[in-house]
Image (cartoon, rainbow, N blue to C red; front, side, top):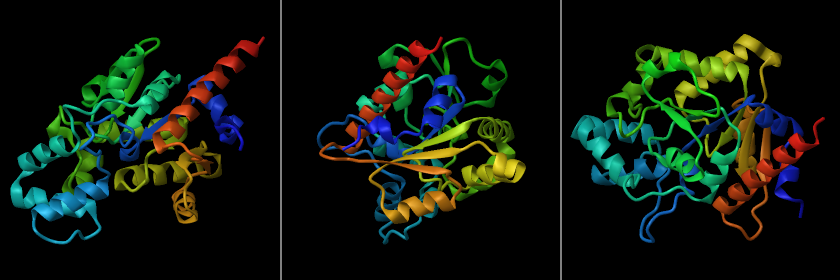
Length: 278
């Protein structure tokens, strides 16, 4: 079996090395968190199932619709309180995949996650970072060596900025216009690496569509890191504009171990390449 690093395109390694790649991190990456034995980090579908169960009905298959219905029936306060519980905010710790990810030389990271696993991972590895949730921080840029974590859907420390319900998504481009424009600019000027992200969010798809419209065949490439994806998953990513799906073999490893080893090998390859340069 080939080493995991052999599955990573040379062009992606170059862009990560030079700071020209921005990762987009989704809920799937949070599955790598360290939790108490009886706990599990939910995906969006799991959250949809949970709120449907609380409303004593079958899950419709649309998490956003279920969360919106729960918000309308029980209030935004109850929805936020439920998310805090389901995402194990007090107990979830970053796993090895998070720590190895944080060691990579990304200058900016985009995430739609409400949790704080990325921030805790950067703390673990001793790297400076700046969470950007409120648009007021955007004009200040970043200091040397700092990674900006753009939490475009807000987080559980900023409930008024969280994008959860259908109404939140509908208003995103107008109520959070600065964030919308910033993300559009970033995706226009960097290659993209999707990690644990399904490209289901309508705002990201709207931004991604704009980038494709602006630059056509000259837009920067987009990669998706997937662990042993099905052919249906691969075709879904390609249909949504991903240039190349990077399929990583699992072997006998867990999903999190595959990602941790991959990020570690990327870091080594970048360091070795930098040493060899004249």
